[in-house]
Amino acid sequence: MTPLLDDGQRWRVIAGDTLQLLPDLPDASVDAVVCDPPYGIDFHNQEWDGKTIRRTARSRGERLSNGQAFEYWTTSWATEFGRVLKPGGHLLAFGAPRMAHRLISGVEDSGLEIRDVLMWLHGQGMPKSRRLPDGQGTALKPFYEPILLARRALEAPVADNVARHGTGAMNTEACSLDPGPGESRRRWPAHVVMSHSPGCRPRRCAPGCPAAVLEAQHAGASRFLYCAKASRRERDAGCEHLPARPTGLFPTAARDASAPAVRNPHPTVKPIALMRWLVALVCPPGGLVLDPFCGSGTTGAAAVLEGRRFVGIELDPHHADVARARITHWSRHAGGEDTGGPEDRPPRPTRAGRRRSA
Ligand SMILES: C[S@@+](CC[C@H](N)C(=O)[O-])C[C@H]1O[C@@H](n2cnc3c(N)ncnc32)[C@H](O)[C@@H]1O
Image 1 (cartoon, rainbow, N blue to C red):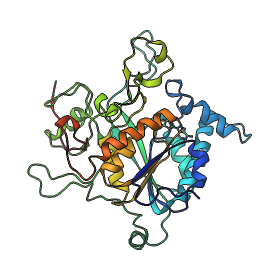
Image 2 (image 1 turned 180 degrees about the horizontal axis):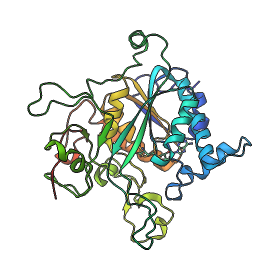
Image 3 (image 1 turned 120 degrees about the horizontal axis):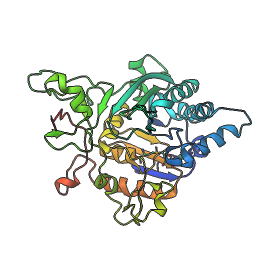
Image 4 (image 1 turned 120 degrees about the vertical axis):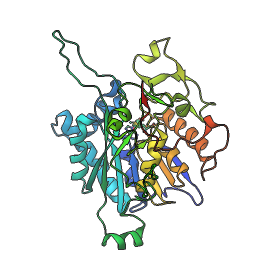
């Protein structure tokens, strides 16, 4: 069995295939798994988001539909999570709305207990719709992503399990919202988190921003947690020494001379503030977070900023390099100190509510 971290090591990113590496990880060694696995939707024709999943699932010789193959593949990694998690350890996994049923069933079939489905409202993304005559279309605008919350079975009643392993419960108080004006108590964390729309300005929401839409009835009183979308600056911070590459790694990007070259070209970077809140919610302070699909390392950046240890696994060696660079950068801010100028401050979730609509 491979030890996850050496003595004194705070984090590590391994370049490799999760499905091959997970069986080498020790039993009950991880406090939480926080991940953003491939969604199985052939995102921009990325092989890892479709073909590879189907090939892996079908290599067992069964005839499976695309949805069945995704579910089967999900069960194969979730089963390993059920072994490497400590009893009562939580899993958080993002999914696509149209594949959420397969994600949830696949995780459930692994033996993990489904606890909840959180919703990240971001209001971003364009409808992938065909425009037909008479005002008809074929798709709606994407507005949210589900985040599955599951847990390895407890070994004892929850309080005893927490005392024994540190896992089994969530850090609800640490992740609650500060009292707003006129409120005496902190607000219990909800299973909805929001990002302002990219076009929002400090005191003005862009049309269609989830904050403006949902909070209009509450006179601006913020009831939810807000996490800024990952800006280009946030995505690239720490990667200045890496070669610039075309954004997105979309199949067309290499041929498109006008595509801007960036240091972190990962196409699906999550906001650090969102990942900080999720990590803080399910991993005990000082505990170990595993992200077996770590991409450009956002969960790792969040983990070091929240004082947790981290192990990431990423198939693509270039993304793994970006992940190491980003985590190295943000680990300098661990412990809460805001070094550098305001633009270099670690992103954190806020309670900032609706801004006046544009
Ligand atoms: C949705 S992205 C994660 C993005 C990440 N949350 C971030 O903010 O950068 C999923 C990642 O899983 C990786 N991946 C896909 N299959 C994998 C496998 N079998 N083992 C390890 N990584 C894998 C892909 O290369 C991709 O970078």
